[in-house]
Length: 80
Picture 1 (tube, rainbow, N blue to C red):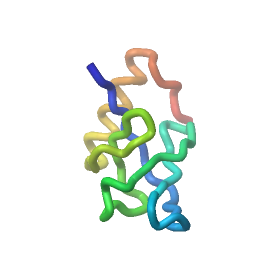
Picture 2: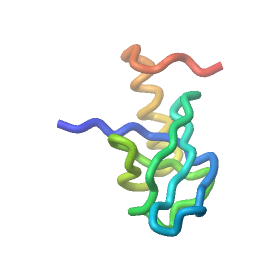
Picture 3: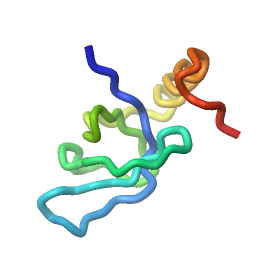
Picture 4: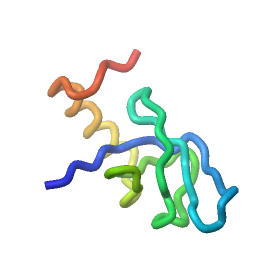
């Protein structure tokens, strides 16, 4: 079973035309993520990420609900 975590795209790096990357915020933890499979994704949108690859876009409500559920389980810190 796989677990994909929602994150918000903070910035997009188009410097390498063969590998489109983005800086993604996971409840305060910033990671570089491959967004090559999602060519239409924009800054400010949420994506589901598994092992460093954005798998699909999700809407804000679903992302926030999932993050709240993860916090309730103790798997994410509280955001101030």
